[in-house]
Image 1 (cartoon, rainbow, N blue to C red):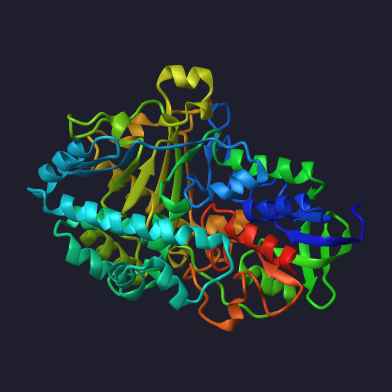
Image 2: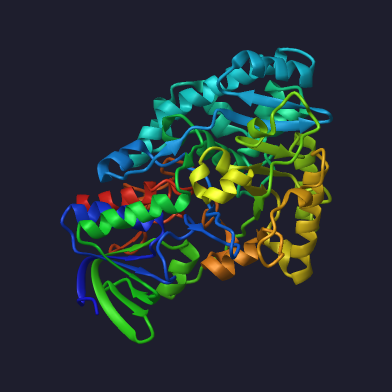
Length: 506
């Protein structure tokens, strides 16, 4: 059994809780981490979901952009992140839009083939030069005490960028800058990952867009070697090495904000006390543990994990499938298709032609496949479907229908049905699993299946209640160190770092 008193008790051993534990234990604090599941990592885990198939998939979270190099260096995290040369490929009829980070001329030619000229390509370069500037200015502030809106605007130092990214709906800026529907859609998808919003009218989409383009000052989305589990297993090892105690299979039942008492069960009920309690939990869950009311958020994504026997053929013979699928492969994500899907989902209907995007991580990191699978030409494929809010999945049949329509959406942009490329497990079952917001609520304890725990916030203080680090709550002993904290969301470790700094500063 653990001792009865700690400097810090952390509820939840997801990556943010582990970052906080590692920093605090390294600083000499006595730290206890309590985790409901039988493993650490939260949604950043690698699993072998198909029996007899030697493939380790990043089942929930899947790429790394927001994790600052400073956290990796501070903690001595031995993590290899691999850059993806090809940013994206978007099928358009019998051709497609290829964004090749290693060959600007090829990208320009691809834009010309799809859009009929250079205008949108030139606008693309100007737009992403602007986001790169914002990333360089804003990313370092995420590990510092919160600025207010005016101070962050001064740091950005670009009135046009501030207007287009912070002040007016991102969809309006995109429509003004780009003429082609496909190009507009490629830009807008970064405003909609895990976020149910209308980018033409809702600044929530701007917040999502910012977090997708400012990661670590570059906005690059990288593949962690060994899968997402390599991130969290490494963090757990560091925390334990410095003296933190991690107990899995221990569900927190209640938190007393006055005395810092944490009641949990591992089959029997126990109570420990923390001078500070860090909640690596969705705010709605923390509210329940404190005995307070909370509004449940709503997740909005369909995740499909697959193992392929081979990559599917493309309609465009000029692009190698290994190039097209190593970056982000966009499926029916033009601006108009995104708008139609949002309208249908808002009305409570599964979109007729669901927008989605896929990634083949094994093209960048073959180590996630066993030797025989690698030699056979097999690959992993991860799909993230947009505009699939939790409200659509009250009926068990809805998941099957969403999966059917999403597969049809994929098939419509390929030269062959994706089912013919799926690997079969020794049992004969196809290597495909789907996760809806309802599944994430049931399996991972996420209210509404919201992958960011709640809607993303601006990366600046909006009121005095935000506190100096953006992790404070109305209870002095309790800090929020999960994705629901200000400057949270994604696999970043930023809320974990900031909660640890708040403790050490105190």
